[in-house]
Amino acid sequence: MGCKFVVVSVFWGILAMSITHAQTNRKFTLKRGFVEEKLRQSIDRYQVLAKRVPLHMFPRSYDVSTDSLIVTRSNSWTSGFYVGSLWYLFEFSGNKSLFEEAGQRMRYLASEQYNTSTHDVGFMLYCSYGNALRITGDKDYGLVLSQGASSLAQRFSNVVGCVRSWDNVDSSKYLVIIDNMMNLELLNWASRYSDDPWLAKIAISHADKTIENHFREDYSSYHVVDYNPTNGAVRRKHTHQGLADESSWARGQAWGLYGYTMMFRDTKEQRYLDQAVQIAEYISNHPDLPEDKIPLWDFNAVGGPDTERDASAAAITAAALLELSTFLSPDAAEKYQLLGEEIIISLSSPRYYANKGENGGFLIKHATGHMPAGSEVDAPLVYADYYYIEALVRYLKLLGDS
Ligand code: GLY
Image 1 (cartoon, protein in one colour):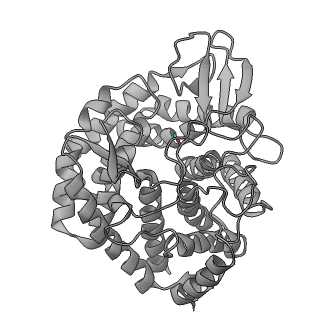
Image 2 (spheres, rainbow, N blue to C red):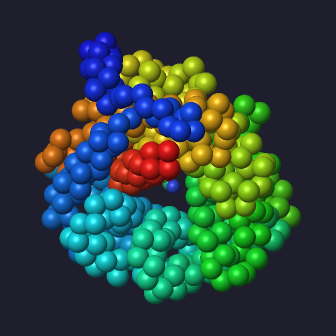
């Protein structure tokens, strides 16, 4: 990073920007043509990626030192993102080859609807089948989602009031991670789809318990809360992927922001909007948020210009902030929309956005998967791409509404 990067960034930012005034008095910093061009480039990159991925596997990351693509089976928490990105890119372009690629990959995900061993079934199915249903209206996709939600709901405990995130060999542990907020979207959807209020109640209970137990006074969040499954008491708050138990793991903050924004969208309960705004305040005011707005992998991992970033946390944050801005008055929304725009500008710049043929076909560079385990550090991650594309698509919708 350093001075040269700041100069390039400023130049890049000016290229990407033009101030437009919407009828609503809302200002838009990014040009429609710029956003559309990034989506077109992303289609180009993903056509390279598609050729490298075996049909029954799902791309997750890329090891530049060995030029090897890292792929998973359908039971990885990341398996739905590639297909989800294909659906967003199809929605934007109408490109038939994307439709076909998404459709054939989906078949290998369907078995996850019966997966009761992880909360991640929400990520796996809602990003893939959820987008597929929204875009195509194909009712068969709804059946898979509905079964997936039933599987997820089996992980809810009335005593704890939460959906269990991870299974653990030690049955005295009931671990809930902040990431789990994201999986509530599947429950909310299924509640509407099947007219089953219980599924929405589960989501609300989980979101309320998470407000109660995952957040510190400054609205940063713990990664993991360990509940006692027999009486629901909190036993321990700690980290798994962050720097320290009391630190703020960047992606965890992004999951929380996105999760409460989504909960407000689905329930219209003011407390969820308030929570999302407070998390957005924490992120946007953080003194160690770098100038290009791509966070350090953990907000507390301050160590100089070479400290690893997490571009995936930035992409999730941008997608969430753009949605959050739609729920606020134009004055209150402005700073969050602007931060979302600044993140998109940075992620779209040559520093973070890969050239065609590099980065294994993935779009975004400099994400961090699991720093304490030394895995996927300063690497592309399929979910960084997914939320970047989602942020671009959301931006186009905002422009379209204006
Ligand atoms: N949900 C796992 C992660 O964010 O790494």
